[in-house]
Structure formats: structure tokens, C-alpha cells
Length: 134
Image 1 (cartoon, one colour):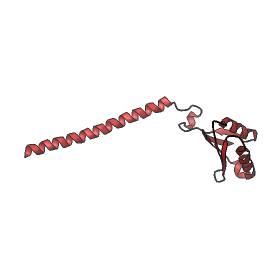
Image 2 (tube, helix red, strand yellow):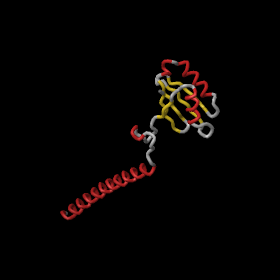
Image 3 (cartoon, rainbow, N blue to C red):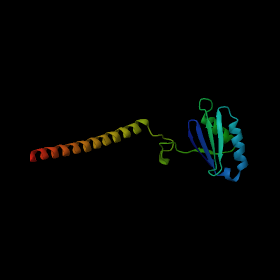
Image 4 (tube, one colour):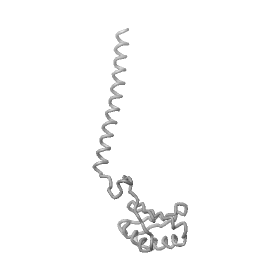
């Protein structure tokens, strides 16, 4: 089984069979590099993976995956950024992320404001006490 991590313009295909059959991995590298829109294909022998850099305006990830599947590489996508394995196939909503960021930002802002206000009040009271003593 091969695993694919993909962001627009870059795809990593990791497969343990590449370790056993380096010739197959190199052949796939040459085939992918010949596809119009593919800018670079590199082999990471230590990670048993191919890294494909492509122009998403010219060629889509689905076409590259189809090419690999046609050559017998059983590809399964891994969760993308923002997904946990339990949420596989269900991307995190932008609204959820924005709401969480706004809530965190609001709480952080209130905490900073409170700390500054407390410090200012303490200095102000100290100044008043100091002036009253003189």
C-alpha cells in the first residue's frame, strides 16, 4: 500500500515496495517526469518515496494518482493538514478554524489588557501613596 500526501503543486508518494524494487521507483520517476505540467520528480530512497512537483494549472493530482494506479501502485491519501485520522475525508471547516482563532485572540487580548491595566493601576496607586507621604 502506498500513501500520498498532497498539497496543490506538490505530492509525496510513499511506498515500502520502492525499497524492495528501486528499479520500479526510478521507472515511475521517469514516467511521471514525462507528463506535461510536471516540473520535477525526485526520489527519496531513505523515506521510500517519490516527490512530484507539478503545476496544478496544467496537470491535476488526480491524473498523477491515476497514472500511479495504472502502474500498480495502490495509493491511499493520508489526511491533509487540518485533519486528524478520525476525521479522514472530512476537512476542518474554515469557519470552525476562524471561530477558534477569534476566540483565542479575544481571550488573549483580554488577558493582555487585564495585565496592562493591573500594572498601570498598581503604579498609579503607588505614585499616589508616595505623593501623599511627602
